[in-house]
Each structure stands twice: as C-alpha cells, then as structure tokens.
Length: 118
Image (cartoon, rainbow, N blue to C red; front, side, top):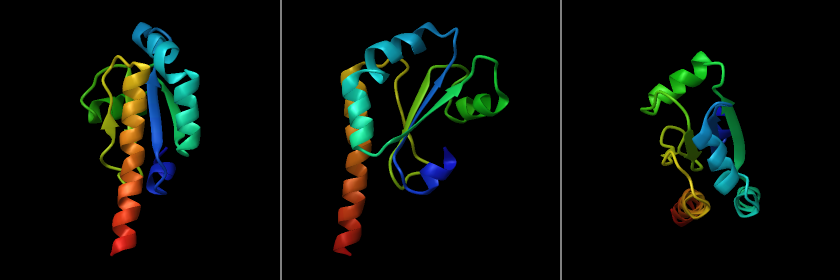
C-alpha cells in the first residue's frame, strides 16, 4: 500500500473484518457495485483490503492513527498525498463513495495543472 501511495498512485483502502456487519453492507451497497468498480479502474486507483478479523497489530496501529479503534475504516489516498488520506464515513453509499473518489481523482488533475503551469 505504501509503495503505491509513495509512487503517487491514487489508493483506496478497505479495512474490514469477517464479523463486521457494516463492512459487509458497505461492500454490498457501495464498494462492490459495478459503478464504483468501474470508477476505480478508470481512475487507475489501486485497491487494498486490510483484514482485521484476527486483530492484526499493524492494522490496529493504522486504525488508531486515523482515530479509530475498529472497523470499518475506508481511506482514499489522493495522488501525491501520502500523509493526507480522505477518511470516509463508516457507513458508505454508492453515491458518497463515487463523490469521494471523484474528489480524490480531481486532486490529481489539479496537481498536474499546477505543475504544468509553473
């Protein structure tokens, strides 16, 4: 995940667990919908899933870093912002997730425009 973020790629991270009902709903109504999957693909977004079912200490540290003690936690790292991800609300809708993906991807466009005009 860090390598993709450091390389300037847009990254989506889904921290989840098998016991998490909200996580399952998020996948069904937002993350795994054709529209969201197409937006991820079209935007060149690298997607990762962190499974917290067994309480992985590295995932717990990441959750705490983002002000959470449990899942779900979904992050979008806009290109070139490795330390400033967009932290999504715990309960996702397709429209909300698409909006946040567009926001992150527009940051790439804005950064490229600023770089090109310098």
